[in-house]
Amino acid sequence: MIEEKYDFYSPSNIKINDLDVNMKRSLSVMDNLDYFTKTHCTNVSNLSARICEYMHCNNQFTIHCLIAGYVHDLGKMFIPQEILTKDGKLTNEEFDIMKTHTTLGYEYCMKDINLRPYSDGPWYHHEALNGTGYPRGLRKPDIPYSGQIIRVADEYDALVTKRHYKTHVNISETLKDLIANAEPPKSVVALDVLKQNQLLGKINPKPLKALFKATIDDILYEISGIVNYVNYIESQLRRFDNIFKYEKKMNSSKSLEKKQYYKSGMLLLLERGETLDNYKQIYNEYKNALVIRKNRIDDLYKEIKIIKGLKIRTK
Image (cartoon, rainbow, N blue to C red; front, side):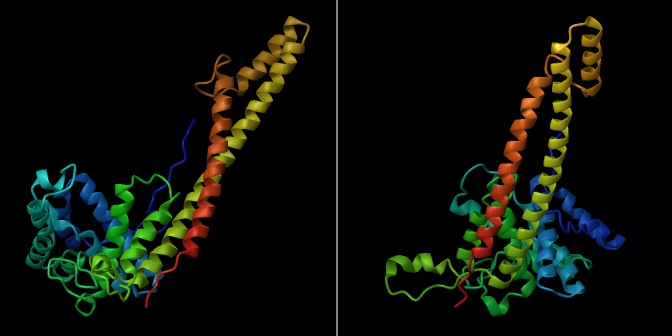
């Protein structure tokens, strides 16, 4: 039984390969990254460009964010593998080393005339609007808009990867976490919550709202893929219904000739891998798959409703 497939970032899926030869040559340095980091960079690149599209940014700025987003983690090729791939929380010393990927990526871009204009990707993607980011602890006025967009895309993809999403069901939980980082700190006096509130107001709510729209379109794309698969399953079930009809006629036939005739009809309807011994099991698998997919479609529509109801407090 075939499975439906979809790309989590499919609706635009802008490709770095569409760039000119000199830029592609400079970007070939990304092949030095491990598979997971390079995949993350590709995802952030595509998502940054899609956010720009939903914000109606001009084409030049969108392409800029596409490339800057792609190289944002370039500096990780200089981070020791035992730190980069460590399973578990980093020590303070290890985290200090990890944070240098921003500066190292920026310095590498500045040495390459083709990558120099896109050094803002590595340099700013971990800066926070409220000054709690790194490497320089900049605040909103000093962080270019490209860096603010890439940060949203970076945090989203990191959460998607960490939570091993295979579908957009429950993706609203990830968006809620991003909302927490977008909302400004509340006015408080109690010192025990001051530290917690320092974490708020880190990312720009405007690109986050654009991300909401992109996510809803992704969910609709996933739904359309599942609907196509549901149609396929239903066509298979209709085929099996005809097999059962032949079986019923075969069992009720008196003559051996007619029994053989209806059995031949059953065999003609069977597809590769199906036999008279296993077709009922396969039929039940299709029925179960149909229930699962229809339930997922319902869950995805519920997810869209949840996301549309999410609000970001901007003041």
